[in-house]
Image (cartoon, rainbow, N blue to C red; front, side, top):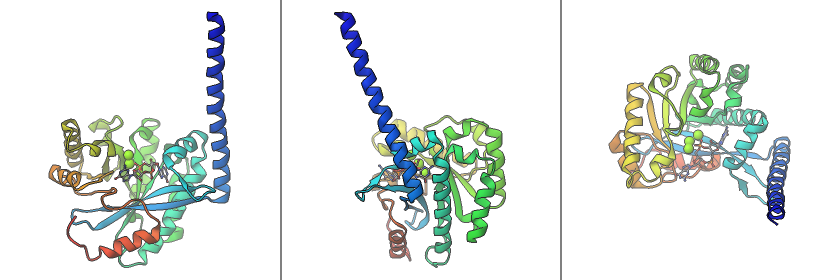
Length: 284
Ligand code: C2E
Ligand code: MG
Ligand code: MG
Ligand code: MG
């Protein structure tokens, strides 16, 4: 009888695995279609300084579903990364962000913004990544200093020398780098010192309960100290309320991104948002 139950258990497990695999396969298939049919859009979330002025915007991909809703990139980017579909997707993101940046450079109130673009490991590992980005910069006629690439710590664990080489090539033409979700991976000061970064981005998970959690305060304080000693600027993501904003400022972080300011929105909406604060309102 125990044997019987075991078999049933096994069958149940198999069924669950099967379901998971077929859900994944269907998602992958849908993602391939989405690439061909260009079902993606970029939304933009402002990054602001101490005076509440927009200094940049992060491009965040959205996948439009048949019913008009959007699937979160948190769901499909990991799959795209496992299947190499991130390469065509990443190319589309970079191209679209550069075209948008070009348009902003022609709008007086948008011309100062830096465009932050998320880049996955597989993208920067491509041999011709530098050439790809360089060509986009040239063909769109954008100021490379207005382009910031967001990398995550985890991505930097493999072939670090190669990545540093690519980063340095880009750095030389003016492109800058931010280390995204900082604090969630493993980075020593020694290691960070070798990367041509210009910014650390404090992960949202430390900002969430900043007021109530003294551990998080200690971590944020350490990240800010690290950024100072490395000569980098520091930005906090996931800033949702004024209390977090005030604490971050007290701790020495002067760049903020989060729902307190704006959700990620379509380009036109961001342009209106920036225009409404230009000249700055001076509160937050
Ligand atoms: P990320 O780069 O860390 O982006 C920040 C995420 O936090 C975004 O989620 C943003 O909408 C969300 N967020 C911003 N402010 C707040 C806030 O105040 N509270 C909360 N709770 N969340 C906030 P999103 O757009 O769903 O993107 C999720 C992740 O997907 C990104 O995390 C990034 O890792 C990845 N991703 C998005 N677009 C791209 C892309 O174009 N290329 C690549 N490679 N990855 C992307
Ligand atoms: Mg990011
Ligand atoms: Mg982030
Ligand atoms: Mg994050």
